[in-house]
Image 1 (cartoon, rainbow, N blue to C red):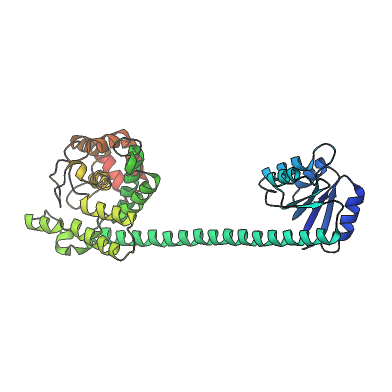
Image 2: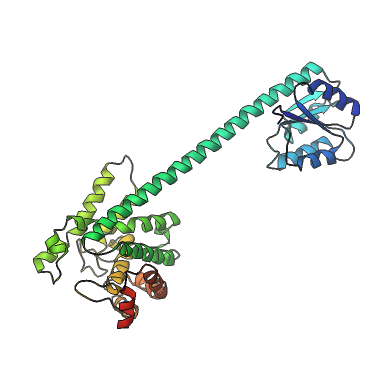
Length: 371
């Protein structure tokens, strides 16, 4: 394989082509075209030259037109073009630079000048190509490492969330179901005037990834309460409800270690802290009402309730999908943001499909049997 730079000479004067070829062939690969059509045909091939020596005054397509064509094509726009011309008017030179020429060599041609300028422009192109390749490599490396960091982050989040769910005898499928419910609701509401500003593509993706941390605070609840098979006493309920504040505190501690705010951790903190709030203000821990409840938590509230209803627990069987839908319909405007509830009712079958896709062993059969 010939590694020497390649030069295309475009000139209708065979004597000029022969002279330039004899001068340059000792140092470079040399190719020739007698007119614009041949030059453009050469550029249609797989291998492009590193530099073009281009005559201006040729029959048919002139050098200006050829240069314009080359600079309009992404494949050839960065290849330096040096005009060969007998024209010496300043306006002609200006036009050449306007259409993208890198330099001018006037006729009669000086061999040393041609060789020096060709070498200079090839050196400049080599440097530009190196920087372009280096930048492309660095961008690819940054992208690769960013993907790697995100993959580690996602895996860590899922591991933490699974640990929390495992402690109270729920499954990793609960995590997958609820995060998919949240995304489905967010996608449905993204065009709604009340939610459009808060549900961009990026935020929806972050909601999907942060939703698994909604019950991370349960790791701080004593087993005697968390795993109790029977009904909790009022005092035990009070302790159980502290998992929302415990989750908030754990995520806030992680936020404090960062030099800049993290929208991902903010959403995770909102969800962990407020997903048990109710639209009418009767929830916990802050008894927030209406729009004071973060949007993230409002979405998670409905997703979590739906999944609790259709899932088997030690204190209840799994409810069929239709019964869960009616319970949520009844909670519209009291437990749930009315618009969030309406979005759920519009895509209830999508919730059913998610529940089926990530069903716990036997759960779907039990629910169907009770329908």
